[in-house]
Image (cartoon, rainbow, N blue to C red):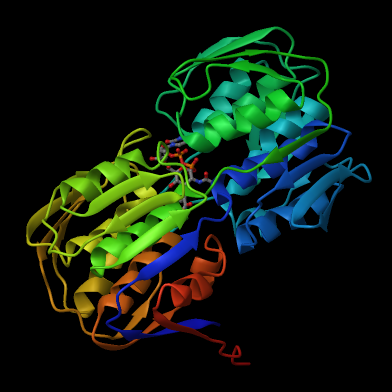
Length: 422
Ligand code: EPU
């Protein structure tokens, strides 16, 4: 199992480019199930979650071919089972994104229920309610969702809460439904908009993505398309937080400032200098930074996927900050690890109080999920001495070449490959 060995403190400075967004690439890959023609995707990040999904798509008869940095997905053989087995789904919840497209295109899908995960229970009831509203017969048996429909039928449906993969799943299902579907209280994340753009390029008729209400006029079939995945705002945001935290100076290339606005506003508020130019987003912090409260919220609020990194940042800020996590019920697992490095944090349910600045010292720490891992890496870069972050496989799920990118910014981070004990 790989670990990161970090020697700190160092200041992050230089240029770094954001990779394609993992959370936009995942639904884009599953859109290949909606057509018999080829889908070519550019800027798909080379991260483990993508490889996991390629494995699942391969099981479902979709071959992916990599040429010149692009991935082309094409149906190669039928898979009459239309199933996503537990072994594949349990390692990655986003596998549930095959449900909508399989049902819409094949009339049948059998997908393992994903179960809970480190950050919360994360039910998929909204996905199932919406598919039922579109006319599907949905049954839960033996840990699987089994859904059937000769052809989905357009309807009006309101999500009880904005759900990112829920909105994406239903957009894909409704794209091939008969008639018009109106979806209310949709997730407005940029990744949802990216998927809608891809589906429209395939021939879908979707309007309103990025707003609360999305209208989908169903079509009979979808065809070939070529699409470039948007930059990863969470990955990019992680490096910008690293700049602010280490008194550094980082220019983030291939980024979209509008998608990162909630973070950039916060960085400006705490006293970092934020500049958006044609070259990218530059964040500098030459003077100390000030503590500010934070509450996570669905887009355009502050993303839960940057909450852990922001907590690492607040350990270096002057004053007391209260961080409220409103999306997931168990997303503070990085707090005790930060405390082991010297941070002053108090957690009470979904609220954490961080008092800074603290002198962090290197320690052996354990990554518990993807974004918690990124938080610990940032803390290790800021801490005096050696930090070893264990269970880096979480990081590899969503950060492309993180150690190389950090090295290019001056951090002393190395990957230790530790053979699994037998
Ligand atoms: N929810 C329900 N029922 C549902 C769906 C969601 O109760 O049917 C609840 C969830 O439990 C949560 C809230 O609604 O409390 C929002 O969850 P959402 O469905 O939006 O999360 P997701 O689609 O499962 C995606 C990202 C996550 C990111 C969240 C929130 C992907 C593949 N995953 O998850 O990314 O944290 O949206 O923005 O897009 C990550 O990349 O590290 C990550 C966890």
